Image 1 (tube, rainbow, N blue to C red):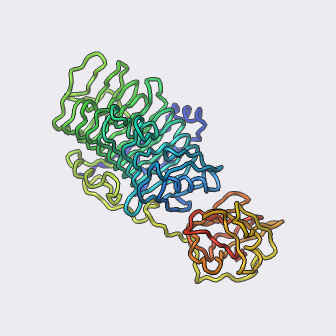
Image 2: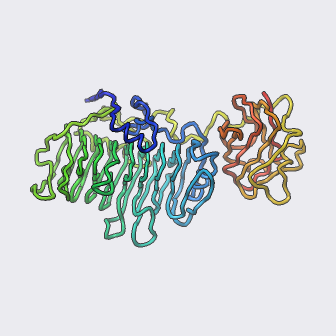
Image 3: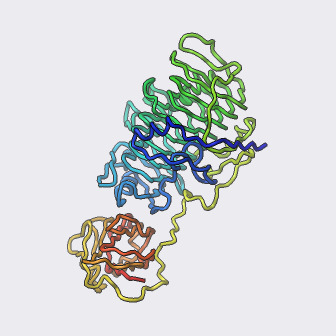
Length: 516
């Protein structure tokens, strides 16, 4: 039976004050996202869209992921990075640039915003390599597997966290992912999904967390209470010792999750935290809800949960289990709308939807898995309406003739000026497989179309590209392949063609520009 829950929007003054103190501009909460978009608390504080509206690039190594981040016009230029293959220490290196701050031993999303990382094709596996989000906002991670990230032993990465967030992080949505370890702290592992040092507005949905000593935490210590507004829904926690999650301060909403074999404790609400726990299925587990390992209590609001073969310890000292008959001891207002599956069908729904490579299936509250919306912007679809159309030849005056030119780099024996001389036998090449070349004028020109002509014998070498208004940094178009690229007319003094992916060394014979 579907149970839509209509709940009022909330703009608490305390949240506003906290956000203002962190330098965040807080907008009114938006309505619940459409199918395929972010859900839960990630819809608040302006929403979480990741790289929607930006270019899409493909990466098969960690270095390529970092290169994509570093190749943007700015640290906030939207980008979707489609990842396929195994990402590990051997193919992940530090890349430098003005729009990134990367590291060699992890996927580093630091001091950036507006990024989507999505697994495509045969899947994306981050093997012994964690994903680190720091001082960043509007991040989407979808359809990936992160496994066996260690904090001790060899190799180490990301403090042992599969996905870790810290230091003024805002608006992160992790969806349809698999996070797993092969043991606990004594085997070198830490948490699967950790948030600390002022991390807020996060949703973990349709994901699997398994075989770890620690599922994850919100707050690194009893004094680290600036984190929160986190939603966990339709996830599978399986063979986890504790921290499913550990919540220190802040507010979290857990609904329609399936918890199996929580060996020591589960949802640990402490240090003034509030947990809203709706229609979950707890199975073959111990102490699945309460305050554990501290005398600084947290609280919970419970409804509709099923406890199947759950054992409870005796209360006392630093141990305050919610069971054997869990009752609410607080109320929690949720600022977004959501639909609850009956707890009885949660195991089957979660089994069909949660984890990487499950087809991004979701539930609408009817206990029946649904295919994703085909218009979902996070669906792997490299087609872009601004892709070059070779059947649309340019007309009018080529504004590049007689203009100036420069770029980011050039290979030996080539020249920037070769792209605006009208001679197809000369060309510019970057000093590698990626780079940028620009056409510029002493006074503004209106440009609505460009034509990138590759030199003879090099056709098809250019892969992913962006066309950028160099005056403002705005991305005018993105796609893949050379040819004609059209966009809305814009007045500018300099226009840049950035090559962010290629199958070899590109050779641009002409960078033609047209007013229409």
